[in-house]
Image (tube, rainbow, N blue to C red; front, side, top):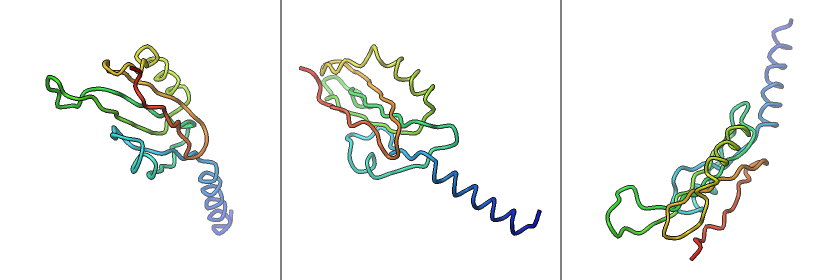
Length: 123
């Protein structure tokens, strides 16, 4: 094969890959769903076909008696299978009860689209 044709096919292949690759917002344990969680986008790896969003409500890492609870939001790329397993494992703790620690997650498909959780705890 002509080296120029090979190079053109390689470039075309990369263009098709990037044109069809999923993009997700990414952040880790942010205190709210702003700034990094809505401004940082990652092109997902091959096989990662959904965006995973997790919201946790709990005590700060440096726990102390009487410490206030806060939100922790994480977003990342995942495979549909991994995301569904993760979501199922969190289902029991997805209570939104303000005085308990809880964790909810959701999977979604579509470029740079992740669930906007209603993060208000239930009183």
